[in-house]
Structure formats: structure tokens, C-alpha cells
Amino acid sequence: MSTRAISSVAIVGGGIVAWSAAAAIRRQLPAIRVTVIPVPVPADALADRIGCTLPSIGDFHGDLGLTEADTVVRAGSGFRLGTSFEGWSGEGSRFTHSYGEYGRPLAASAFYHHWLRAHRLDEAAPFDQYSAGAVMASADRFLPSERGPASRIAGYAYGLHVDPNRYTEMMRAFALHLGAEERSGSVRDLRIREDGFVDAILLGDDDLRADLFVDASGPQALLFSKVEDDREDWSAYFVADRLAIADEPATTEPSPLDHARAASNGWAWEASSPARKSRGRVYSSAHLDDAQNDLIGYGEPVSLRPGRLSHPWVRNCVAIGDAAVAIEPLDWTNLHLAHSAIDRLVAMMPATDCNPVELWDYNRQMNVEVDRVRDFVMLHYVASYRPDDPFWQDASSRPLPASLEHTLLQWNERGRLPFYEEETFSRDSWAAVLIGQGAIPRRLDPLLNSVPEKESARAMEQLRNAIQSAVAQAPPQSIYLRNLALQGTR
Image (tube, rainbow, N blue to C red; front, side, top):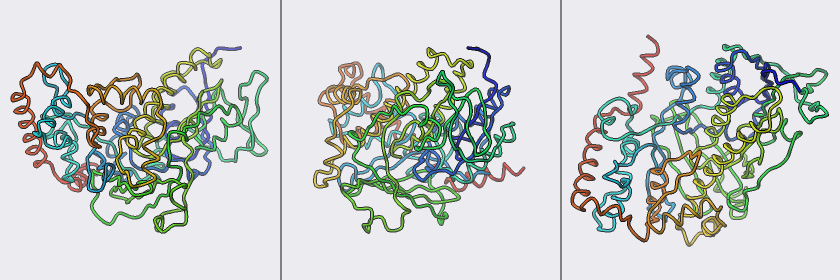
């Protein structure tokens, strides 16, 4: 087989994931011809439909050369500093998960160990009060972490809340500007060679040949389902199997804090950007009928079938986004995982022989990352405490993947958090959820003995006061967005 460089890529998909892949390939590998066959975005393609994103979207934009004027002002996006989790450990419970640092390490111990000691002495403020991002989000204020007084306190990061339709159009225009081509037609079938490689996509009376085929068509996996169907089912881990979404025009100023509220039979979210307000309802069909009043005001529910492909890249066909992995939107990882797949696809682009050694490493890296995202999402249910609700009893008693079980054993015994390869969320994020939901270790880390309790308490209080003072100087997000828009028109 020829081992020449790949010169042509065909992408099937009509949403954010497909056009993001087209833009990334054309930007980073401009010698490759990219053709996109747009197909309607299915209702269960969450990476294309969910507007909340993780901070990694900023790095993705940076690699493409897109500015905040492009991705925020023109696309109608807002900033996201974190999520307020309400009621996950009983009525009235609340904590904010933000991105970046919580406190600062003291001597040899991470900050959360010092917080755990102060908590045992009943001398600690809520854990999220030591995060500049969480305090700023709760105050509905915003400044990028590299600007303003808060940058001197602790590092924090932010994602975006995008309008999926406007964002898709922006990314499509950008990909076409970079030289990607758009070709109409419905996918009828694939022509497979004797060696199992895809030769062409059959489009009605025509066909499209390419060296590499990218499936970004959503859970239906229009291409990949004809190549291989080796899917790992996660339904044993997750009780929620339904999702209903409602989008409406924005009626209030956008907030950098979104909300995930536990309900008796699942959970609901609210998030806002300058262009829209999004609401969603995640639940289990075993605990809530699709026609019940709880779902009035939402769109038609779609089924969630959690799981991932065992081998998302097979020969010259690779699945990305919801074609490769399906997981509920808790923690907003859907588009992040799609962007991660695109980044790896570009960085690990093989020759036309798609050497199995290279594909093995791509598949290994993606699966390790996806599995730890699964663990982190599942953590919220396992650490919840709503003993009177059958949904939550079911969700918190599911069998644990070995990797999550190991993490929880380490945390519950001594507050240690093992860090795996390809982690999406930092140790501080893991600690924020565990502490926020009331999971307190049995013993303290002995390394704490190197710092006296009073010295630790004094440093914690100074940091908390400094964060409060710095956040008070940051403007409301609405003012920052207006100033950003004015700068973009100059």
C-alpha cells in the first residue's frame, strides 16, 4: 500500500463539530483538501447543541487564530466561570465548581489539605470562597484571569456559553474562508475496498472519494456505523437516559455562573449568554414519564445512550464528537471531547496507510481521556446525598468503574487524588466537587504537620480577603461584554 501523505479529507456533519474539524485541518494542514458534506444536526448530538463549554475552547480558538471579537462578540457568546450545584447533597446545599486554582499550596501540601484540617476544626469558610473564579462568578462579575487585580490572587479559567446556531455559522464561514469546500448531497452508502478501507461516500448518483473520512454526524454515525460497531455501553453506570432542552431569547443580563439544580427525579440546568437563555432537564425514564408536568416548557425529549466506541479510528475512518462518545451534559464536556479529538487528529495525522501503530495510540489516548470524563461526571451522582429520592438512590448506588473506585478509596482514606494520564479536570476540580458534596476524608495528610495550624489558618484568611477585595473591583460581565463589543468595532 502507498504511504504517501494524506491529501484529501471528507467530513460528514452539519454542526459545530464538523465545521470545527474542517477549520482546524485547513488551518494547521493547509495542503490537505477538505470537503464537508453537511447533514442535519440530530436532536441527540449534544456536542453540537449544548452551548456551555469548558475553558479548553479558548485554546482551540487560539490555535485557529480566532479572537474574542470573532468568538464572543460576533457569535453572541458569553463567558462562563463555573457552575452552581444546588441540592445535590440535600435541599439547601450549594457549592460552585469553577475552573483553575482553589487557594495556594502551602509547603508540601495542596491547599485543599489545609482546608480539610481547618474544616475539622470548624474554622474554614466554604471551599469555593478560596477560588477567585467561583467568587467572581457568584458576584456576576467578570475579568479575564490575566487582567485586573484578581490575576495576582489565584489563577482561574473560563469557558464560553455559545449560541450553537450562530457559533456554527461563524465556524462554517471561517472554514470556508480557509479553503474548505462544501458539497451537498445525502449520504446513501459507503464503497468499501477489499482491505476494509473506505474508498468513497456514495451521494445519490454521485460519489466523493478521499484519503481520510471523518464522521461528525452525531450518535447515528452515518459513516462509522458502516465500518465498525464496537461500542462500550455505560448504561450500567448512569441512571439518566433522557434529556429535554429549551432555548429562548435572553431577557436578562447574562451571568458567568450557570446553575445545575437537583430535582427528585434528575437535575435541571439554566445558563445564559447575551443572545439566549438555555434550559435543560436530565432524567430517567424509569423515574419520570416523558409526558409528566415536570417537562412542560421543554422540547421533545431525546434518549441518552451513554458509552463510547472502543476504537474511534479504524483504518481511514475516524469518528469524533457524539459519533464517538455519548455522555450527558453534566460538566459540559461534550464539545470539549470533540475539540480534543480534532486536536489529536491534526497532530497525529498519519499517511494514507493509516498505520495501525499510529491509530492504536490515538485510540488509547482518546479512550483514557473519555473514561476519566465519565468518572468525573459519575462522581457527582456517587457523592450525592438525597436518600428520600429513588432516582438519587439508584444513581448513587451504581457499580463503579475501577478508576473511579480507586480515586474514591484514595480520597476517602487520606484525601489523596491520583492523577491519570489525559485528565480533563484538575485535582482542584475533583476536590471542589468532593468537598462541595460533603465527601470528607477519614484522615488528614501527614504532610500537613510541616505547617502549624495557626500559620495555615492565617494564610487562608488572608487569601480569602484578598479574593473578595479583588473581585469587588471587577465589572459586571454585561459591562465587560459591552466594552469588548466597542473595542471590536474600532
